[in-house]
Image (cartoon, rainbow over all chains, first blue to last red; front, top):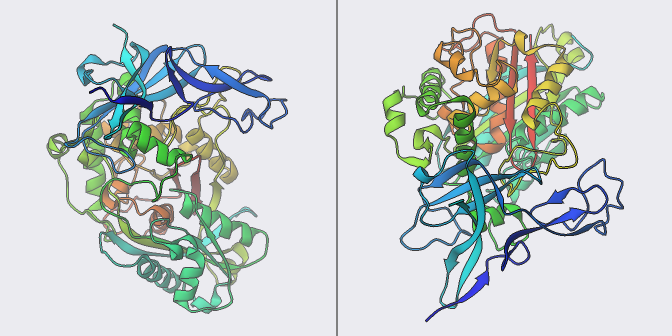
Length: 145
Length: 396
């Protein structure tokens, strides 16, 4: 039986279309990930800084691999690990337009040997963990085929 | 002596290890040793600054009062502070401000920790609005994963190799051999590093610092007080605990992302570079004046990054200094003559204080077996979570 798919966190990404959601300042134009709804953090911004200057923003879904690493040991809670532990990779991907680096797990099935700094990556969605009721999905990075 | 210098007249440490006892005991031992070293008694202390630990319950959150009570309530002014890995430096900064404001002449700074085994986990409880909780939940981004991202980036930018990283450990383990306060006092070979288990590729177990128990303390005084006792003390001449500047474009734990540089150009210096630059400027010295440096080698690769951040060499040149033996004791600019975190493991609130203990004793010529000859200027740097960091310049 197929389990229900739920977002591991609400409001940070969408699955259809696959995109990372943040916010962007309407006064100075600075985008934020994860979403910042409190106040624009650019000290030079002349916006009201009460959150009214920030509205939802969908980031570009492609970037270049800034760096990557793999986890060979089970992290402590609140990471929810399958049993037995399954090693995973993290990617730091630089988005050219928004000029920032965003972390994400690397999609399952991609190995260290498939990665090199500077290559093009794209956003995808994959299962982070599951329980009896549902699969919890999160944004992930994957090499552009 | 500049009017902004303060004197370091006492240093004390409880050896680092995994002793399994209460952190207060380590802090107390360090405080007693620092007071004895200064030739002062606890009743002479007018201000006590505690560096907090967040993994030892309430007494850790109010460490200043905890240590003051353990030493015996004396009516001294007290403060407690937490600034992640920079907690110890923040406590020193608090004491320095009190002294420079003329509010006290004699201050005691104490930090101690009792650390759990294994990965640092976020503090307990479900907190889905806390980035430090979320990075574990959504990414499985342990501290070593961030160290590994930085190490891999270094390899890509400068052609660093895992052998280079191993050589950092080899050097620091050699330095630590002669340090009675170090936890690991064993010479490690390159092959041992390269054969240790991979924790977060490209880093292996022996590339990554452990978590330790330990305690460190300093007796700090005004320049006038030190002079009145006929001392020519080692001085703290610069201390920066500034924040990063927007946009912060280097990814650090526990970040999910950097700031965007879309609307504001990144400044001339990164966060770590700006800490060191600020401390050097305050002290009126340049990186070329430095005799020795204690840098926060949470990983072997990070020591190389720090060398460049504080200006000991240009970007990408740290490996060649290391390989030429320049950063070894006896070389041109010894880095981590204490043995560094590689030999100590991190005892968070004590670590930045321990760095100043090392610089002070080196500048006093009291570091038997690992003495840096004719040391006159030292710098200690560290970085913690959430934008806390420090750089301290010590001179004689």
